[in-house]
Length: 608
Ligand code: F6R
Image (cartoon, rainbow, N blue to C red; front, side, top):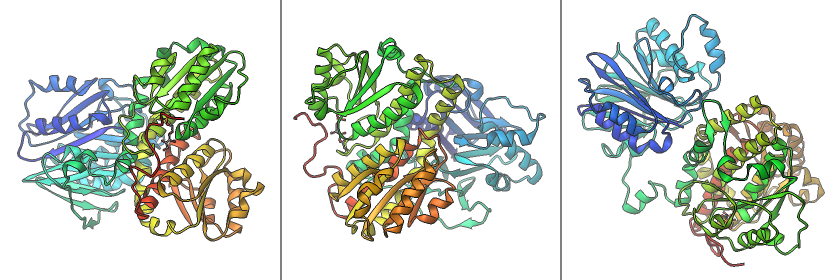
């Protein structure tokens, strides 16, 4: 997940772009760069490391032009070194990119060996494609229109050309791009924060739309180059709204924050040049995990469901026996603890009374405990033997959202590293999973687009008598989490089930007033989940299915079908969580409930 800024206007582009990048640094900070017009050429300056390194490099640089682009990078393809930093420049084209071009190898092969690459990124490929098209069309906008249909993936891109020195073209499919018009200037950015100091009037680009900036104005086109009328949004935040970054509730802000929260939790543990994981190193528990005969995952509520996803990952990748327990059950059931057990305790607050009691119980019998907390120096964090952090930042909404998906990402890293110390996963598989994890934040940004669907559907959904959430394998705990979110926010009856259990009882619940939310992404259990879905459909259930792009059979069986981007089976839970959070949020809101502070609940449960 990277940050993009573009500026065309009377001020010094260097200053505007740097201040924009500063506000986008949360999106990526392993390298940064700018390309700014100077003597009719785009002068490119890039630097490895934090934005401050680029800032220093730029101190002595001057530019006489009034247009430029900038980027702060979070590496997915290629190591975080200067040659991979953006902008990428090819034959007078300079381009910045956020996201992933999925068919990059295929497109690269099609260009042939005569095309020389100077970086290891998928982004440079797009610069080559646009440079080729400019040579044919001599038109920057047309070049983008011709290249757009060839790109697959989730991406947003901003491009300039030395032959069109007063133009910028921005286009996207997935991650956000926003265009703002100020006095005699136009700004383009990944987040409204970078534009707000200059103007409150912005246009949000939809997928497959293109913004063409020329001098001090811009127009928006569809993917075929046909002009579009776009509405201008005025960002007029009060102090309270500013805290919520303009969202109506903290919960909605936190749902939308998830791509960056996940990027943040991944960053310190991933070597992006080698696509390898290092998460156990700092916990001091590597040896214990290598020798473990059993891993016990214990937590409450949402943290417990994250732990259940972690259990699937640990068993499958690290081939180790894993038990999962609800803390309030574990502490009173006089558990028989297997030899060489290592425990993972998950608690966002780090203060949950039952989880803390389990920690103390385990320590008495000398079981090493790894804690996963969001709040540093909380009691559980302090008392555990090894520590990992969700790193999600403060979560104000009582219903957990970003801490949940960050925990899923962290547990995935942990499962990969435990697999590594136990030698159960070939290196190329580790690399494949790491690539999939690095792609997740951009994919999550794409999934957030279903906010609109649930915003509209909530008026109907709120009238159902109940909701059944179903999934299989790693998706099953997400079904449980989806049901919990609806219960706690909308106060409606909702249950999560393993889809294979339908015929053992819950099928009797289904009729036309029961909504069935089916998680059926493309994975090894897809076909089996479809059969379960047919059973529900035959009983008249209204089916909302969440699957993978191109799952036509699933779409045809469903009343509503939401397509997630293609991802590894192990990353799907992070994507699926988003629509389920949005469903609960919008239904609760439509029912007039207090979404940030649902009745009877508290953020930190320090009593039994
Ligand atoms: C639900 C939610 C709760 C918590 C549970 C445990 O949205 O947040 O179910 O997960 O109360 O809290 P922690 O993780 O702080 O131990």
